[in-house]
Image (cartoon, rainbow, N blue to C red; front, side, top):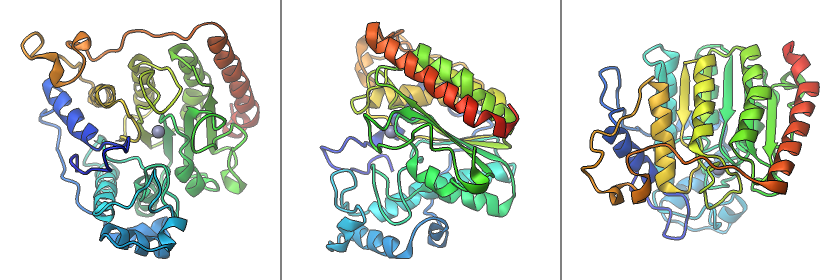
Length: 366
Ligand SMILES: [Zn+2]
């Protein structure tokens, strides 16, 4: 799965998953007796229609076989973001199968927490591909879990991009509390996810969007987590959290304008664990490969309540995993935005938090 190639110019690199596995092993947070590594089997294609349109699935399957048809373009197949790649149907089916299998392990009580670094394709839509996503593994796994066992599921999307595909699926569904914290749609794809998008009908108040300004740093991020994300999750009291742990919020990410370090990222994951330790974690975005692998290694450590330690510190050259200067530590140096950028990020965050507290909190008895 990690060797699958979206093309030399495409920012999505599945090898991040392999790097994460290697880094977890190096830091002693893999191979514990309670852990099981599952090979991702292809999802049962019958489950795809839990979200996707048959006509789109047919074209995607053809695209995966190397066929080219003009109708594909209308479905997002053959664009710069979601190119035609031989094997893409099979690969996406396996990625979705991984998410689905780990979801079932948790629902059946075989596992408490699980992580699919090749999951979290939150932009895929019922009838078209977009934003590097072809099949929405998230929606399919959640919908099937709800069929198997009625329960309260919180979907928490930490990726820098708004989780638009997942939002669409559960916009009218109060069984799923959808919370997405992301860079504002004014400056970043998919150009949606305003704080005024709060769900409809029975789902009113069960969609929560926290858009952040470019330049948002750890301070501002910590503020919104404490002010809206954690209180809403506590009030909803989920039996299971599905967490999209995209690492493209990092200051080093080449595609976004957020400025977080993995210190803020860890606080977020720890906060989720404190509220509900039954977590299905999914990879999502992250285009600084080395730092994404570090984020996910930290996330896996937190999910397993382990302290990562580098058994080879000082012995193995740093070029194996990244820049020499950061070897021996998984943790980022502190970073803070300054001046007008910081002020604007904080002002906007306060405004968004106040809106959510007024509009959404009462629906949850807060
Ligand atoms: Zn993203």
